[in-house]
Image 1 (cartoon, rainbow, N blue to C red):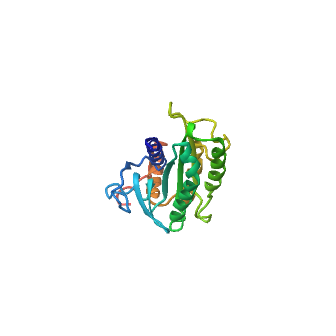
Image 2: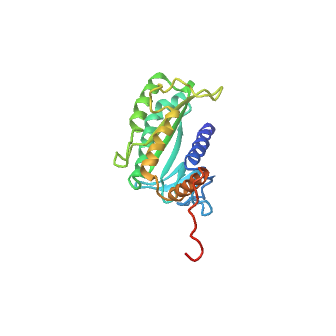
Image 3: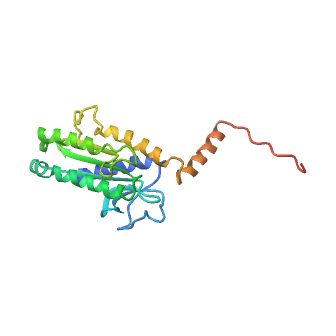
Length: 224
């Protein structure tokens, strides 16, 4: 269970970097808004979203004006748990995506599923890969609500903490290195040039012009 928090921290930090180096902060209890002193921040921890089906806590979120990105990690840690509960976990993922998308269709939903190598049997591994690939295939805001924009499946070694480099297959969208390739384009498509990024991009353009040595606009002579 503690290993899941490693993914949560890494995801929150990466999302904050993607958004321009904004702070990563703790949510305020069950608040539906980010902390007032950090309105433009990534929250890591139990972040409460009231969706169209039920209120739901996510492990990280970006919600400057409502949820734009939400993320949750899931883990099953024993052979018997995976065998009995993997389909229930799939139902939970679909419900969490649906409860956000029914109310916030533009929100990007991301999941990481972490499973220890010794507990994962070949039959469950194949079934999980096929099912998660289908579930993580949402392309735009008009797509089905129960689908997620990005899902990563990580099979890890409890002795070393390392992720198995061969699972999922190298061409699978479930590879953890493929997750940014799904989240970043989706975010740009839905939120580029919208506040708070609009002001940031204007400032970046000004600074870039100054760095390139753009000549200053000449001032008119006195009395002109």
